[in-house]
Length: 287
Length: 105
Image (cartoon, rainbow over all chains, first blue to last red; front, top):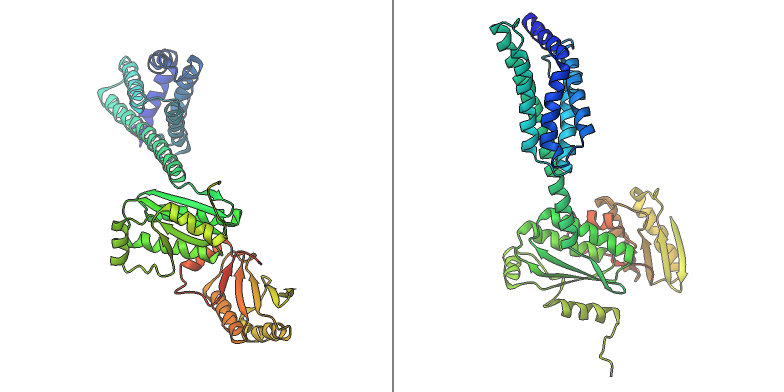
């Protein structure tokens, strides 16, 4: 521990002594990497460099600089995490940020190598210490990158789900729900929730669910489908399923799914006719 | 619990949230005696204020519907909430003893 205290003290002293030089070197590199593509403006780069060095000195002068759970270390980590998000949101690449962090580490080590009062043993300890810190910072950047990507994927999935199951009121009191693609349990649940709320909102009398675009179905999903039909019926609406492909029909029968209480029609058009018939609506060509 | 005659032979039952279904036998007798006196043939059970129907409540609804059928009254549950319908489908088997309608016709 005594060795570590002296290592961090040497680092802090050298940093404070050469803070101007270090800052200008990393600022220049920052402008080359992020300034050219307008990811960060010059003022932001300057602020970033100053704040980074301040946070690093605060960590080095803290009670236990090696403690990666300390508030000072957390502050440094969060700073990079936020910077990473900011750059990624502006269309930057995570590789550039990682290379920049590595450059900052190299710059610090080069400045320290100019200090002739540092022994080989101390230099080795400093190298190990700095490597540890910068590795953690790179991990923080990657964590932010992954979180950002995950949230983007999640948002895209949500949007895709919403657009792939459009519930349309095709006539007063008649809703249509064309289901396209693969039905999995989570999607079925989302569709069911949206559909039931829509029935309540629009006071729909009939719902036509068209499965023409459904490629395959498993036992859990077919169970959810029946559950959806039952829920629609419980809300006092008629549920009509259309477009059951031969493969789906075969799957339903082999899964012993009882469609006895479910009204089915071959096509969406037939389903709509059935819904209109139930509502007493007559659609005819103008003479 | 409010039981109102809303038309000739048509009653609307609005259960309050404090309806004690543990005393269902007494409740059934009370409801049936009122609707029988008025020679009703239809009872609407309003579920608008029930966000969830648990198995015990579902049992009560079925029991009341069967009792109504015994005195030639049809019971229809109306205004079931999406959450209640969704929850009910997760455990109900077969068809309920009551019919369902969107609202009073």
